[in-house]
Length: 387
Image (cartoon, rainbow, N blue to C red):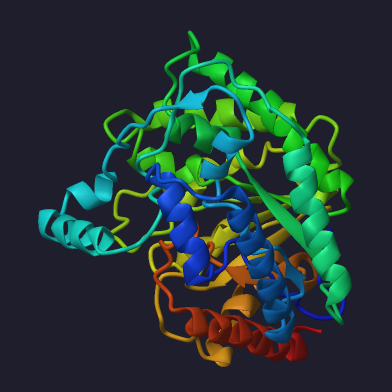
């Protein structure tokens, strides 16, 4: 995993805007309509060829495929694994449910979207196994091919994969006797994907919103200790899946949900960080532009990170069409670098993805690119002061 050796490197949290036609294809398939697989595959590859040079042009150092060939950051696993079927309705977020006027407004806004919902996912109705490594291999090979076509390239390329915990929480278990058995099966299935991504020479980012988000969804009516126990079980499952993956090739993204809402029921980072740090990873990605969590960079003061770990600080908000001023970005980076105590171990990133499931992004495509440029400009300003 690359460090910011002589300047602050920039990255983002994974998903980027998808072209409208690609979104429509994903939505039609999610609704059960017939979609030509060849047409969808071609649209995904075309989007990949578009999104990689766009990142490079905007100054992203550690970039990815924008998740163009997936309909969502975790939903895609239902097409690569056995055992999933049907659908169910996830619980409303605890913070949103406290504000009925806001909840109605949010529901009306979502109903007007052409998008794939993360809140009506399939269920686990059979044994979960990874069906064929060819699917993840093809995604990796497509990304590598496009990287070879684009001048300049990234300082380091990465690909994402979901945590066993977000799949277990979102895709309701109706097959396994216990949650632990379900998590174990998911870990063993996802191990194939984790090892393939690293085996193809990419950095692996684990997307783990469950380690914070599920406190105000699945565990909103239960004691904090029950949620912390869930975090412990998920981290153990992650470590099981990463047994053969060098920790310096893995970074972990944790957030409280990529949606505009009150977030006043979010679990504090200080409560979960000691457990999250037990994960065998070389870096963490946290949202520090988020108005509810911007202060929590203080949690990394006093040598909290291991000597070989880095911190990707979210300094760009993925839920607002404000384009952050580079000076604001630089100040955010500098605060985090002071807390960590070593700017080489800090990268500048986004709070979350810009389109975590197809069509759900709140930021206009052209504004996304402006935000990533502001990220690069702010990182340059911070680098002048820190190095």
